[in-house]
Length: 290
Image (cartoon, rainbow, N blue to C red; front, side):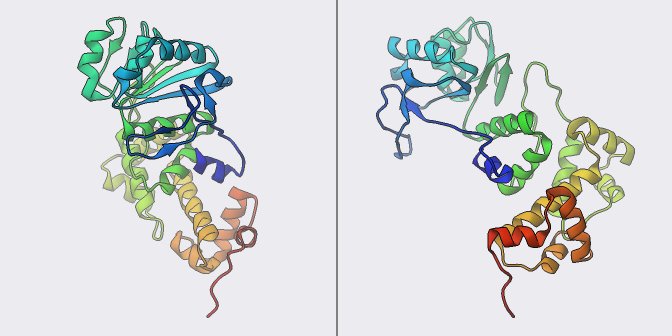
């Protein structure tokens, strides 16, 4: 979410940390967390992420259940991460919902909360309730939130920044269809071949998917053609190079598969409403002198 704010140049996402009593807590890796306030002071919000860890049974108290019910009334979406779905279910906030929890405690969860439909999935969406099984799946969930609010293009930019080469990994939920794996494989090829871009025929051949079929699947999953997605990936990479390195425009163009600085500049200005030189000037990173 911080990366999205950087890409957007604005505070698209804002967040705060709250603990049960407003005092600092220590994570399971012994990192101190200084909160913005107590759970009773949580303001109205779009997403309330409830975090718990190994001590979730000790946290299952009448006070915390009451705090969760109160906070849920001020939240558009309620999200349970790791073992926190246990606390949400105990507070009566997952009644009649399809839900998951960290798989180490899934069996106990299913036996304890018979009013939930417990499933062994990484992420489960059910109405305004979301449950997430663990740390790695939390990235999948966050990416999905970004995609839902800001579109596939921003999600792809986040993938590139975090070096994630398996975008759109399916996360089972009640209503959404699973995207075809051919799109995932094609995007991975695009990300791996920016300096010497592949043709659509080459991509289709490498993933054993007919070109027309691949184009249809891209339109369905991404709302864009393979060529548009490929261009977006390359231009995002160009902007990252311009903002974070001292490469000159000619070198950036070569690394991003453009024949000349002029070709890069035309495509770049169409995408970002700014020339590469303008971006470099704004970030005050100048090319190294020979």
